[in-house]
Amino acid sequence: MKMSGGTKFLSVLTILIFLQLSDTPFAEQNQHCAPSSCGHIKNISYPFRLKNDPKHCGDERYELSCEGNRPIFTIFMERWNGSLNYYVQAINYDNSTIRLLDPGIREQVLCSLPQHSITFYTLPFQFGFTKPDGSSAPLAVPITIFSCPFAMNSPAFVEISYCLNRSDASSFPSKGHTYAAMGELSASNLRVGCTLNLMSMTSWTIDDANVYISILELHNALAYGFELSWFRDIYCNNCGSYYGCKGESSRDVRCTDCTVYNFHFFKTSCVTQRHLLRVLARFIPFGKPHLLYYHLISMLYYG
Image (cartoon, rainbow, N blue to C red; front, side, top):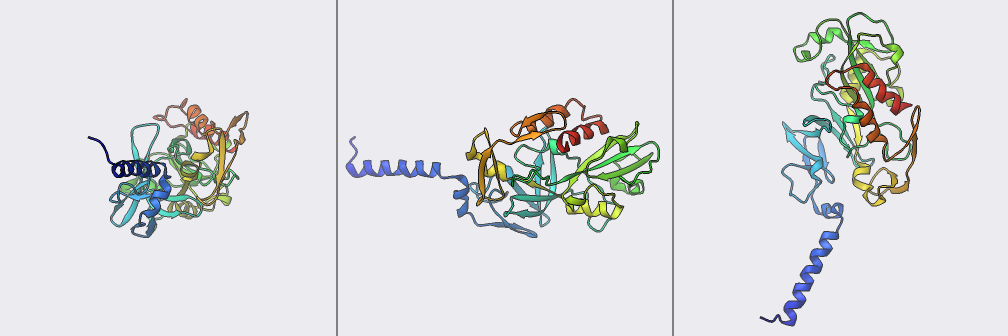
């Protein structure tokens, strides 16, 4: 059966339209999606989406659930087949960051402690932990909770042993002394026999994060949460694997030559920095936490 001239034209036109839509950047297709909302987060848009949004809206890796009128983001961990749920405190589309809160932290409870342990190197590759503007400034700093069989007197950390009497703190050891430190923790502050219990992060007052803290300041830091950047994952795909990318939002994307990071005792390209942290950290078994494992990461990252 022969096709008429009009039928051929329609067929070709249909194919051209399909190809055009296929070549349309996903972000542009998402411009036709109305923002969603959940609780205090009123403008959930690309790359984020809610579970009940249309399939073509947002990126499935950035899917949020809405439970009890609170937005929840699930982080799928890379070192084991597991996931961690965090409350979404804020989404900033101007600088491409999301701020997350551990569900164990309660704003009105001074002694509330994190449920989850998370570090820079366990984060999925899609997230950056430094500002994408080219400054390489950290978006968050670590909070380390550790225990010792003996009392320690140091202004570098605060004792939180009395917080462990609460029923929801049963995952921490009930004997000995438990401490928390915010920011880089020097090996000289520690003694043999201390054990790492948990690591979290905060973006609260980062410039002052290495000063000595009180229990109130520790709570404020935990209650603020930590920020992660999706900038490089979403906006830098067109720069190629041998180039860096800096900026803050979709309106400010600049491809650059790959910067060389100067670690404490050697140099590595920015393409391999994140991978290197993971490889080296794996030499220390995660199932037996030790403060050396934190010191390794902080030595590499902070220099």
